[in-house]
Length: 337
Ligand code: SF4
Image 1 (cartoon, rainbow, N blue to C red):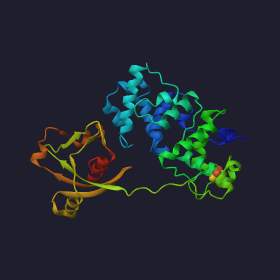
Image 2: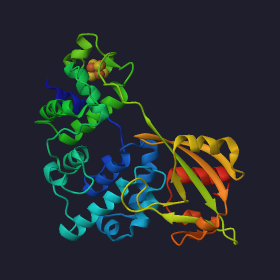
Image 3: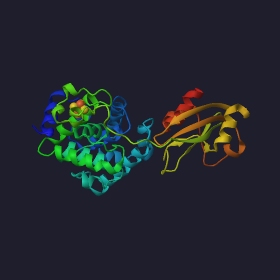
Image 4: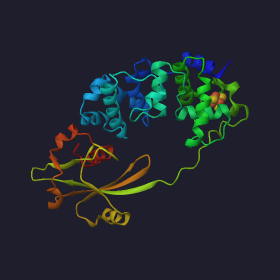
């Protein structure tokens, strides 16, 4: 029996029930897939329900102010995802009458929709016979094929994609792709895969050759970059704090923040050591591509405090604005949220 049939049958008996799997609505599938990138399922489910309650379709999302969309996204990180969702919703509503393209080659033209998301929407919503290859599926494919190419290098991805594309032919694409993802999450796990209960055990080269613990191969990551920032709590006479909105492009684009500046490492360390009377605490925040080290100060600098770019708000208004996780962390540590 072919791999595609085995995975599909296994999914029908043993697959996971997840809320976005009950629908063929491309909008709901799109939202779920974007939220779940870089997010654990348990956390993602809560955001998914909140997001689709506030923006139930592409028209409500496209007509909402970006600030509202970012507020719904607050705490999830990778805010370019929210900005891109908003931009693509505008294209869908205003240029395509709210109708989603049905193939991954057309979907990929929308802002923020990459190869994975395009295939997920076309396969789950429209039944296109294309492989949906995430990190879990890459691991399963690497083991089934006995392929020693590093799965984290882009140039080898097309081989894995081609293999999964060949397995999905002639079977139900939704069931097959969900099945591959579930196999990776529950059976073909990173360590100690449960090969004895795996539906493709007989087809798996890694299993036949005892390579389950060796595959997949990942090439070594480069050393992480560290960047250093000072954050300032500026208060006016009414004890309101200064905030400002970031430009739309770049890190935390469109979010609100407290005044801050990136500084060289030696200067940052000197301040952390307490040379400034108003130093509060240091903290670390982890991004995908770098680690951020932050010093927090409370200050009333006339120069900065009078900056016209600042908006002053009382601390009870903090929940109205969308802040990054790092800034929310500061508010929590200071006990003002
Ligand atoms: S047989 Fe084992 S290693 Fe191979 S796909 Fe199944 S669980 Fe993974």
